Image (cartoon, rainbow, N blue to C red; front, top):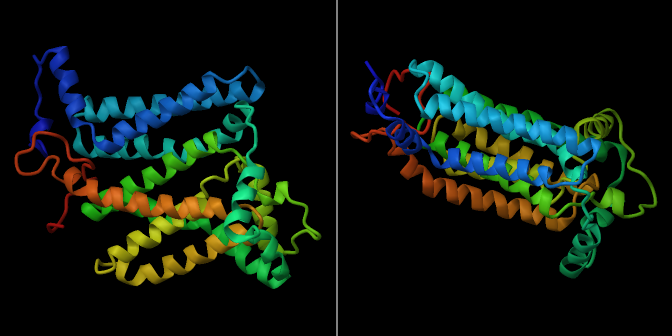
Length: 332
């Protein structure tokens, strides 16, 4: 028994009819993911030849092919089993988005960017009289640095804790909103890095003394050196993702776990955002852009989620935007 009308088999359907049905099944985030990966692949294909460009071209092409293959198999319903289709879609659409961050380590240098740190610094001075990292240098004490280094590092745990359980276990409009908003934050930030490259205050300003930290500061330095994209500052993803999560959890605070989790998520988010400035990774304008992106992503996702949730419901022949991995015991 198919889970929705579009899952029925049409053995004699023409190629054009099959293509039309596949495209009808495409959700907004599917088109967005394709556009994002095509953009990133095109940018690096146009870059001058270099070792970084070679690696980035391969990486970007693989991410694009994973996305295209996953969409063909799922939205084209070449995979007939609903649960298998739901799993392939989740992995094939979701994994290439955070995966694109690791491609940036080679992609951004391959673009041979002209770093815009002087411009970003000048904007800070116009707006605030000084960039926050300089003012916050007075708090460069081991205990303070360790506190905020822990929260800066916890950004990765926060991403995993919010997105992965929801990706595989959640359903409903708030889930559609979370995933769509998270996609918007990720895609816009990564594209922003290619348009407004910079290294941050730690590289562009001479500070009287280096940061004095301990274990957690060492973990941050090691992680940034080993896996950081280096020129990924505008907008600040360490601001955009946590702020988006905090807004999303607060807006949905009457729902289940959200009512208990939103103060914790907000507390972590505020500390992570301060850490980006104290630890000299970001200009104030990077953080402002990250906050703007977070608010915009939440509002756009909230507006579009109602439309997306209508897919596959009440006789709509299209696939649901997220086919469930598990049948609900009760209605959401």
